Image (cartoon, rainbow, N blue to C red; front, side):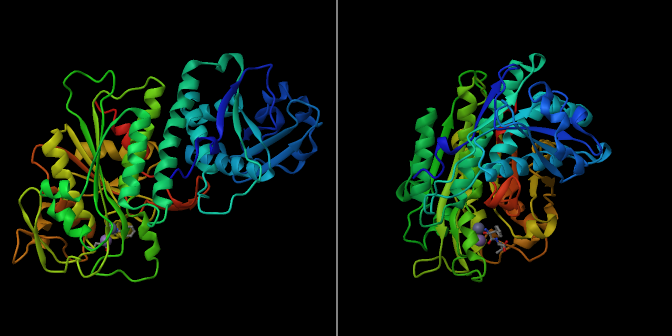
Length: 512
Ligand code: BES
Ligand code: MN
Ligand code: ZN
């Protein structure tokens, strides 16, 4: 099932000077600025701007916005000026948000085409110390993200849709690199839309086999190799920790494996393996969760969604001639975590794929159980140079970092640092948390090699430590706990899934 069709997305195009024609032009103003500062360039096509009466009450303050009207017959007869506040307090994050809000307001006005004055944009970019290409990428993506909506399960509406965003260019700004930057944002948006759709879909429409079907479609579209292992094949791989979680449900587990071998990958380069937690519903199992808010656990496959979304983005980038230097492998273990007569019980012991035994103290600590087998599979099968996993793993991560941020763990602090700084630069907030050996005592079991969870203290750290026990000593492994970053409600993210991870993972895929 396709939740967001391509044609639902706003198209981004370019108009060269002299050909500008749009329902509305967007420009940016700092506090205290008027038409000549903010719309210096737009005025060439909309000469009425300088005398538009709506300027009178506009101060350019942060969160302030004004709509200016000119004679309807003009090629540009409306302008929206976005206030960004004081120059000293300006930041890119605020600018993206303000632009996202403005684009949504244009949609709500019923407009079909809008344009962005690139000179006005670049002027603010200069103050922020950011080039016009990077800024165009961020604003193009902001527009897409602001317009995302998950309507697949609602009655169809025939309200008109904002269809096009034009970059209104002047001769100096009509560069190929700007167009490339915008195309990059579009590729990112495709992956994020997909990841949001997968996670927003209810568990009855996004079972492990539904997800696998979706992965097959993505693979077919982009020419990736795709393997889907069923229960028998998962058994044959000795993934007993994974199976212990799946056991309680009538829905069968799946292991989805994607392989992308880019055209100009460096000869013989070892791959990057991306592993994503794919619990399509987490009830907690026999260690049942409380019912309040349990519906949110349909999003417990957000890690797997981020991995599949990343493949979608990489595929789109490939269509634009952009290829990562290494093969990229995606491994997505998918199952439901339910209670029932066949479910795993607290105290049960299983032998994970690596041969270590695990005493399952709490069946709600299921993510780590499916991940250890998926990590072992990825490592054994593909001998990756980098092994990264992403998962909605622990509520404790929200306690540690607050909502909207991910914890990043690695035994290699520099590697974690790199992921954190790239993530933050791409507006996927992240912070490094430690993998401290001394906490391993929390995971000592009387009956098995390890137990699957420790005390309440440092819950995200012991989860990471648990994973590490199943990863080879000399693998460059990174773990991203995105449990506090999978949901949001803001200008760039209508309430629901975020698609967090797609940008960071895409960026990581280009690691030399
Ligand atoms: N999927 C949850 C973690 C989670 C919580 C994600 C809230 C998103 C929002 C995970 O499987 C879980 O239940 N973790 C337990 C671990 C505990 C039993 C050691 C938790 O965080 O409480
Ligand atoms: Mn759980
Ligand atoms: Zn879970």
